[in-house]
Image 1 (cartoon, rainbow, N blue to C red):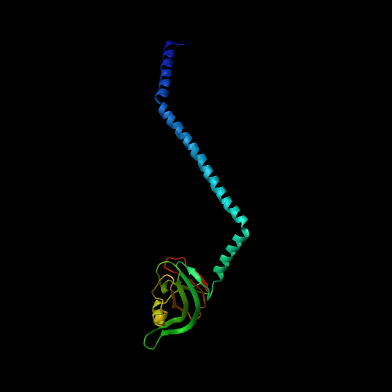
Image 2: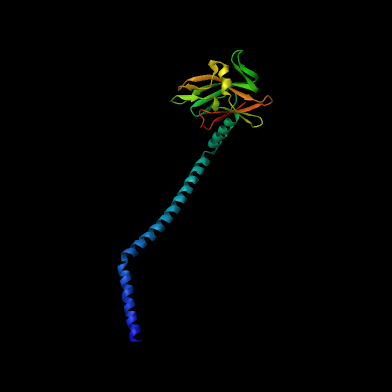
Length: 212
């Protein structure tokens, strides 16, 4: 081996040793980062397994009380599908009970003040109870009617003014525990058949359906 090659190897060896010596801290940090990443990955897997186990526990719990849960779900579905006249239906702070749907009116009001229907007026009589713990305003215009063809109709608030002061639902504030009796008026085609009502305690609530 020539003197030049020996000299080159001697220069490279110390240099390599010096690099590791100078970068011990950086190397240690990298090792910690790698180990932390592995630990996080393993931890994530554990969380996933934990979630799966939690789901299994819930399912197992449901299986233990399968008859009770199934009956409860079945009753809930049946109730939502069979709510009709004279049956309380709740949405938000209000409990609605629709007592009558009277259609076929060509006009509402009297000889001095009233309104003619474009088609026919349907007068929906209901009681509304505030089951919450604070006042809530009832707006007739938040209520919807659907006919047997699936068409949606909004309440006719102008016609609602003429059904009588004691039956107005244009805008009424109901205090907790109080009940309001009122009528919501819909103007629908003469050949339309009312099928369901969608009643709301506010413009943003999910609503509850009442089969007519």
